[in-house]
Length: 357
Image 1: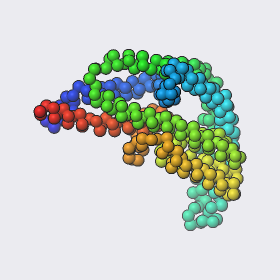
Image 2: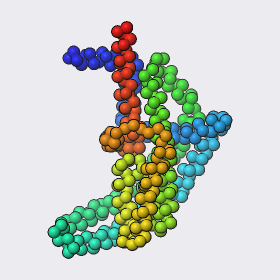
Image 3: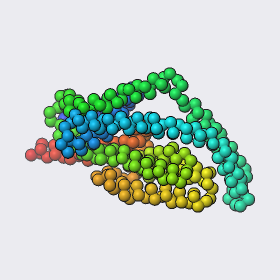
Image 4: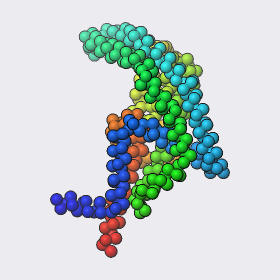
């Protein structure tokens, strides 16, 4: 008990540390308990945070805050309109077409698999392949039914989408326009002396802003380059596959490996073992190499110093709690935890030094 009491006295005697711990607990509790209800607000905060970088650049060039916000906001609305009117219908058609073609792809894949026992009788048996094919067929049929059942026919789905389309742009504009006013309102309820919280926030804000905005640009660039490449090769479902390649950069080490499988399978079903398939594979490999060795160093000027194991654990934990947004913010959240753990002992040691003097 003395060990526990000494640890609590040493680490929680500083009011700044208690304030930071309490603030983090409240934030996590709000997100976990009211995350679904506050999803439009949280998503709007994320978008406003992303756009703040462009607003800041315009301000540094001499343009006042309000015109900068309006200019960036107009470009944001144009981008959203382009995605909704141009990209989403194409994605919907390609997803529907892909689901309809899945039985033919399964049949072709089954034909190829059934020839393996004759070529490699010591490694693969007909019984093993029959079980594998039956399992794949049932999974594909189930997946196809689920995809086709996803529609906007339900009233709840339509209302939810309308709320997001109307409410989120309004929230984004006011979060950008009244940033100083909103932050000032929150500061009124913070204690005047919050050194550790301020230090942690400055460190985390620098790394998170660099990561989140850089990751958003990386997704758009990889998506665009992949689409142009796939379209030039005449690959089917080029928009859908290029979007998957772009989104794969969210998950380090794992995303690229996972998205490679459907990409190469679609290419193989379309062209077989041909020169077209080989050249597409080479082009895709070049895109991945340029992303990892050129684009990432350019976009991420401040590298997040996290071990690969810590990154994978953060993706699993936060992705399990908050789905897509948890995966997207896994590294920033892990950076927040690391910054707190790094600053916490320093503050405790400083307090002990002050008391001993």
